[in-house]
Length: 149
Image 1: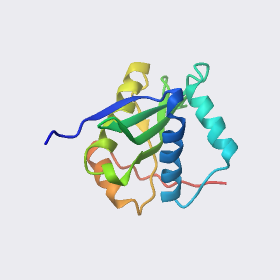
Image 2: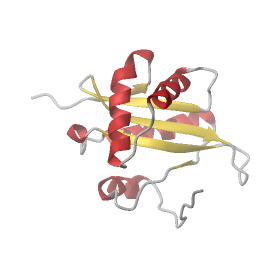
Image 3: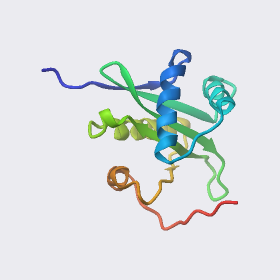
Image 4: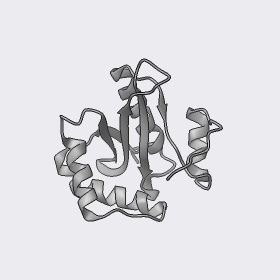
């Protein structure tokens, strides 16, 4: 039996339905959702070449979309170069344990290097134990605590 093939590629216009399915599943994991106009606006912004500071990669497993990652480039007062915030990372449960999450993060790392913004950071909830096993292998846990208005 042939092994699974994972491909990482940029988001394209034809991904609207699968991207929406994946992002809704990601948001549901965190027990939240957004209004339909947010989905439409976000998808349009992710595809707009004038919005050069945000992006999305799609992971395909044997040609089927099974994961996504959103990222945002922004200035940082402690650095000359910008940094990349990895905002959303999701792998469909059917594809977990196959390297989808790692490949999506590595795609963001490569994009950050290409942009000259090598610092990449993200947040996760403390109960996200499975994902944190991966994060502990490919990144450094910081002691920061998030506050929000």
